[in-house]
Amino acid sequence: MSTQHEAGMAATHRVLVLGAGYAGMAAAIQLAARVERREDVQVTLVNPQERFTERLRLHLSATGQQVAEMNIPELLEGTGARFVRGWVTAVDADAKTVRIDDDRVLHYDTLVYGLGSVADTAAVPGVEDHAYNLNSAQDAEVLAGRLAQLGRGTVVVGGSGLTGVESAAEIAERHPELNVVLLGRQEPGAAMTPKAKAYLQAALERLNVHVRSGIEVVKVLPDSVELAGGESIAADVVLWTSGTRVSPLAAAAGLTVDERGRVVTDTALRSVSHPDVYAVGDAAAIRQGYGVMHGTCQGGMPTGVHAAVSIFRTLNGKRPKPFRFGYYHTPVSLGRHDAVVQFTHPDDSPRRVHLTGRMAARYKETVTASPWPTYGRMKKMPASGAFWPRGGRFTRIRGVR
Image (cartoon, rainbow, N blue to C red):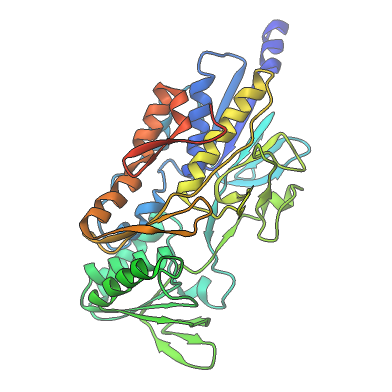
């Protein structure tokens, strides 16, 4: 290799994006599209599989419904970004290296950390061994196979949050022969207005989902769940949707993390301890005026876009702008033809307005499908990443240009 070529290689700024979830994909596509004509920047996206996990549809896959399979290299096509398939097994934030599958090492100049979150199967004994989860399309398909074989029996859904509600409704609608029990500490729809919550709960009742709130599961057994207080509920299948956890890799790398292991960021989404590391999506503890953001696709993709724009500005000798985000809605499907959409204030508290029924179901489908046209627009027009689809219209994300 010539000395001149070596110098050219050394001058290349290597941007490594870890995790191809909604946020990581947004970061990789947005940045790659902006630096497409530059030879001094290389964007690489790392993910353990080529198939994109469409988490917003996993409750459909879990009931045997066919959804389109998205291929990550195809989504990156035309951007110039590289794709590396493999599991991230270690990050060295001081040496600026990432180990893949324990046998490959990738070097970076700037890192986008977007490894996301998974269901917390470690907090309650027996969940890891005896419960199903929706961490991936493969997990959902395994559950679908079990439900199809069950015939009759009881399915316990542990966790009354949005994932638990959508999953319980979908299972009950697709498998009316099954007894579906939804357990949780809070009432389903607890964060909604009384009218929206009442509609959600009536829909679950119509689907014959047996809801028990104020419940804490303390142990999962092969054929039952044990509750605090000593009660036991028989269960042929347990689906666990209560709580999430993030990878311990960020803490092991020496990055400053919060009590949940999420990377603590500054206003530009950079790690407060390692400013050459950006954190996005569920992996980041991002503070706004109303508090720390919680993990959703609604907030995750804008963090990916903002991180990409911040990196691009830095490469051009400019200062990154602060990230500002406000929530807009909480769409919840209740089977295939019903839903409730609670519109929210920027701090995620409920507004008085909500949608229900088929109109809400169409709205939810529009939101669920929005990442794909958004990625496509960003590939052709990177500046379109500053605008985010919200229920069929586009709103500018503050701080993104």
